[in-house]
Image 1 (tube, rainbow, N blue to C red):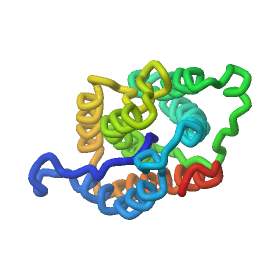
Image 2 (cartoon, rainbow, N blue to C red):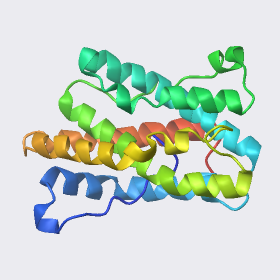
Image 3 (cartoon, rainbow, N blue to C red):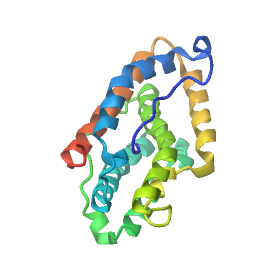
Length: 207
């Protein structure tokens, strides 16, 4: 999960958008808007200590969630989509030692992952969030002078591959589209939003 999560608008006419994607957009729209409004990454008063706390909180959510996904997917886990290495690089660049990173709290209230429908719902939120990093990367650079080498790697974690990886995910989601499990995909996405927002709130980084 990353920073603000953009409104994922259709890139094709509505009639060609898979039902599962239409359902996901509708189901998560309110949670998306609520989280974006409370997350201070785009707020004009953002400062370096606040940004550091946000990245710490992101690590605390992404590290255990990545372990959960890898445990479920096993050898089929996609290493291209790993975000924790970028977060570790950012935390070190922001002044945290290895021992301090190891001592950071980790989220234990994660969304359930009991099947592929749950996985697609989780990934919809996580992968969709990477699109917002393109905008946030520029904002953080302007306001805090942070780039990929000084604490902003996570905001552009996929770099030039962002579009390709998002299109690949959408293709796999469309292939999975089926009325029997689309509601579970949407429920998993909503649960991921809820878990992430609750975690950020407990870490004191939401306004």
